[in-house]
Image 1 (cartoon, rainbow, N blue to C red):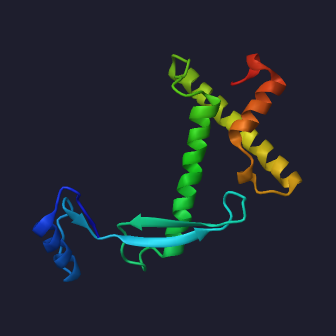
Image 2 (tube, helix red, strand yellow):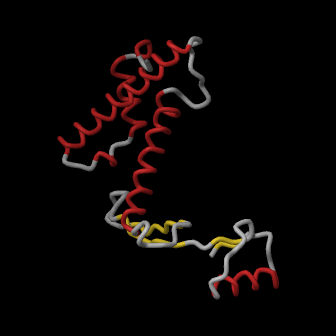
Length: 157
């Protein structure tokens, strides 16, 4: 159970007792949660795994099995990583799109998406040839290599 940090003392104890007895909780004060622990083996490539704890308000395991939630969480971070790669390494932090019209904004976004796809494909191909996990190849470093290879005038799109 998660309890608002603003609640302490006897009020906090009453909420804990209410949760144990199965009473409904005021969601502004406390929420029942489910903690799912799982291990990601060797994510950093150093031979050790990492224990992750996922906290969810989906408390019924039949509604969402632990494995399904762990996979969904992993997929979410894959998307977050892709968004960060686009915004930080391709476009540049704090930079806005240059285009002024909706059609040109759309074209500029497609240019970034295609560039991201091309770099990701390059990473996958290089990782496959080196027989390593593509997640081990750093996107930022690959962008730097591509920029050096084709020159600043042609990159980013």
